[in-house]
Image: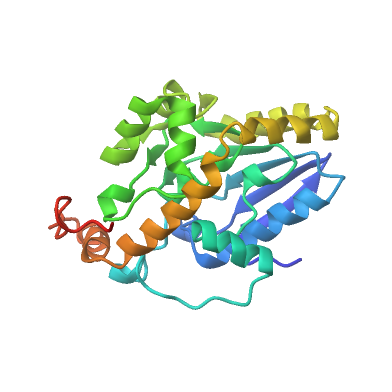
Length: 275
């Protein structure tokens, strides 16, 4: 299978999935999302794959959404290639093509080898384990762009880090470093950049030695501990993300960032929110 925005290699029962837009700091595109969904589906179906590692090529993991569309980054309709039924169903729930790392039967490890902004951190939060470059810039930047965190962030982040820590990172959208991500429990370890991928691969190889059916069942139980929150929350997040992405603040947040100025927010929390 050919991929445009990622690479997939399988060796010694471990699949290595690499975001492959290093010239754009692996900024997220629809194509990348579709490629990742296809890779996850392939790894799930391949019994020779016992574990999956996700990383980024170059000096960043993922710099967030590709903002080449400017103010239409979040609100633009865009064109979509024909997708399998499963991907269309996933989009109804989250706005993204699926399946996602938490939904496949293999353990998925994120080697966050550099900066991880926006979807660059919410997507690896759907992985089972994360290791991070201690100096990486990490930011749940959504509220700073006039939108809101997605991909089940409002369930996963507080469950992993606690409500107060989740409120701190999700509501402020402040910049973290990788070492703080680990201190909050959102990553298992913070390491020098050069050590992140080798250490993550080593953990994946450990998982590859375990009984695959036992791992699959244990993973299912771990993630089902978040249910029934996840499916309904995903649908609500997607509906609200779609709504807010079409509001003036979504355009203003991106343009203020690109123009390096303070944003002039338009929406009122007391008057403009949907029912």
